[in-house]
Length: 327
Image (cartoon, rainbow, N blue to C red; front, side, top):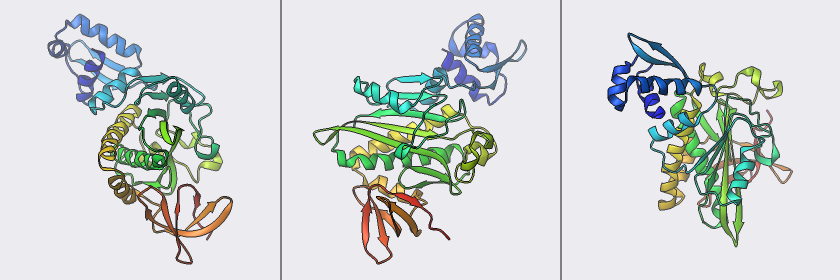
């Protein structure tokens, strides 16, 4: 019932909706409407009430709530989520999702937190995850496919996230840096970490971890990161609804995951290459501690990045550090 009231108030776009119309729409008394409004206020929603005009939504909770997440997922017609674990603060959503997967949690189990105290990215790097300002989440996949397909899932996740953020934060030009970062103007706004467990060369489960710097300000970043990291709010000039972004991502992911399972990697490859900021630019690559200069020219059918070296040879890479060459 709360979700339905919230949906109707949101559709008003900040205008009043009378208690009488709410009562007629939901088939309950105006007293019952008032009680439900009080529950929404207790959950952190700011609702202005007028005896003459009715109710209007003035603000959303600074914390993520099950009500708002549920409403947004329902609005986007997302069906892949089968259980949400919402936390105020955790060490890492990735750690919790892994424990749940080992205990048999189904595909589509989502772990999301308002804060991470020890969030991590690739190669054990820490991720800045302040309270109430970003999206820090991990979800379980059980694709049941051979282990060598795992890199394709990282690329699929990047495409879904890039498409969702472009829609939520238009007109920002957001692109994918291989293998797992999203950038605006060369600065990182999001990272993706997929960790898998296999048995007899088949994936038992995959934990997809995503961190998105949504409403962080410059003061939230350490000084040494300001030249390489940013947030959607800094770039757009206004805050964004985090639950809306979460739902938008899963709507994109669910659609692409279904295409991938039906048609294979080729459609995902095409989309990734179109969104990439990595391709056709000479790049310094650090592979096994050794530096080489090459130009990424595309993906192969396994999901490896094809790099053309200065001598014209081409090599497929599944993992490497990529930084712009000096000068």
